[in-house]
Length: 200
Image (cartoon, rainbow, N blue to C red; front, side):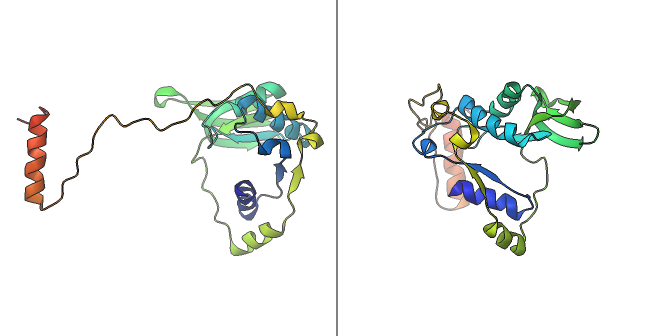
């Protein structure tokens, strides 16, 4: 349901059409690793033959950042990662991108299309969905494909990575909360800072 709602939000904001990949084989999968996502997306890209594939820098569920680049490598097309500005001319077959590198450095480069780009949050000013757009999006048909429709074997979604444990790490610091007047709490804070050697 969350996935469909996200797709419908994109339609409400102006997307022409949407493709959703869903299969019963995906329901019991705890984790789609980069290889599995790449396999599925490659099948969709092979069908659609787009000039430009845009993915996020990393996924919201597992925070891996390899899917877009892995997809480009699998397709044998150009790629750019962590793109924060994009201008493209489909007629010229070139995308001009600015991408973030480490240490606050940015790179300006041109990438020949077809290409896959991983897009940084904040690259654009998202449109607000109008009430009319929301209503139209609810009525639009979604193009839903099963794995078999795309020629993807169910075994491909099992992946090579298994999550063995996930937990919230214990906090290494204690928090002290003071209640009362500013004078009382300031005195208590001053005492604590002296005990810790931070204040004389």
